[in-house]
Image (cartoon, rainbow, N blue to C red; front, side):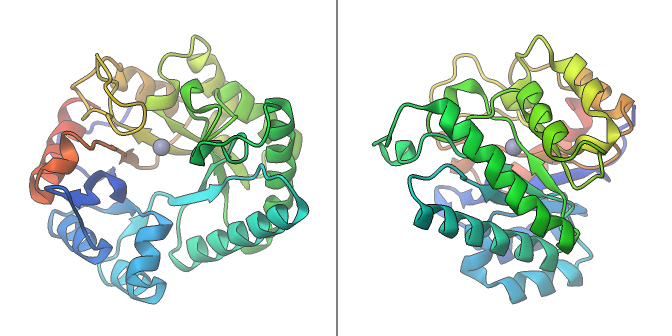
Amino acid sequence: MRDFSQDHRWLSINTATVRKSCGVEQPLTDIIEACARRGIKAISPWRDQVAAAGLPAISKLVKTHGLELSGYCRGGMFPVVDAAGAKAAYEDNRRAVDEACELNAACLVLVVGALPGALSGQAAHKDIALARSQVSDGIAALLEYAKSSGMPLAIEPLHPMYAADRACINTLEQALDVCDALDPTKSGALGVAVDVYHVWWDPKLQQQIERAGKERLLAFHVCDWLTPTTDLLNDRGMMGDGVIDLPKIRGWVENQGFAGYSEVEIFSTGNWWQRDTAEVLDTCIARHSSAV
Ligand code: ZN
């Protein structure tokens, strides 16, 4: 297992972590500059943040600072109600692949979607099995395009509390079943993003990380699970402040040969998004060394 205690060479910042400073939305360009000033080597930006700043500007800035992208957030949201929706989802996902290529991301992270309409409060139906089969079909179609572009796709299983509205793939086992069905040769084109917030509780976690192996382990996301959790989406904790045994899980992942970035991804309306960007980044650097 790599020693993180001496430096932050393998720290990546998911830019959602500092998208708000003292409650105010921050331009991605400012976030990138703040990361670069601290010697942070990698980021993982969100499409809406990139779009707001302009893809060419972000691409240039990333290159100027020699930053890597541990991932690009995000594609997915495959389940839809009709053919027009399917076409729109496919085209949008292709654009996400193109953007990820332009930014030279390590992978495009997929939050696969769930019951159509549920995210806006009105699920179109209750058939989660249908949603899951549409996810599989959607990934299969996108995989062809992503392969031709050389952009790996990383399925991120989300905690079951998001099964209705954000992702109907809820365990690493489920995600790997899809990988094995669509990419049986483990070509490297399809894998998983292991986000500890979503999978730490899973009794099969170690077994499934071993099943994934180096070829399927494309990204590793860290934060912490707070007790009590006060918001299902936006109350993630800073590493070390909760109940996840981060070094243990990182050890499992690295035992398989994963040698990529440890990406900090914290959505925190009530705490970290109320603080100054500098304080949040400095805390990420300190906890990367002491708690991951
Ligand atoms: Zn994540």
